[in-house]
Length: 249
Image 1 (tube, rainbow, N blue to C red):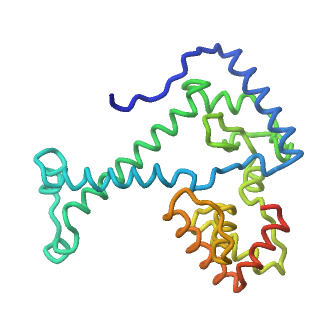
Image 2 (cartoon, rainbow, N blue to C red; image 1 turned 135 degrees about the horizontal axis):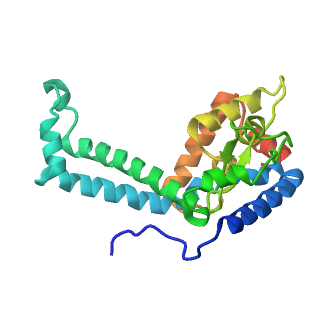
């Protein structure tokens, strides 16, 4: 059976949806006061490494088949030829893989948008803003420019925050003017789009204090990340771990 988008069998009225979102917002308002990090939880990328590896394998295998068989993809490649010098460097299988990646990106965007509608329906974004009048982080009134933020990407709806509140939880690690290590680590983390947990585990691996990994690929990726972080911060792995410990990361 092919993929079927998950749908919620429970239908809520608008009144029920607003009540649900109001309770949800108050839950996070209390949580934010006690622990701002709770508004920005991300599962470590390595947790899904095996699934993503399988997705990659399928994309490469199926792209190779599509590039060689008659059909709309093969026709698209023929209709969009490359200059001769470039054609020698971009094989059809790789071109098809790139097209498949782009199709996957569009599919993920559509399916992720559907997850926001699972509980609340098609007016999810509107109701999320309607249910909250003040920023859960700063307490300031929310205007039309309020931003929607997912505290956890597990199906729960986004919460409305002011621009300042949103910026503060996305940059949870504050650094002062003398914290050169912190500025470098934050920069490389954003550049590589990796978690603090990923950095910690990479440093532990390189210090020969390994922790269990779901796959060899994810542990290798963490070590690369840690090496880059140490180089940019001009410090050692033990010092990075101390920096993380001091901030509870």
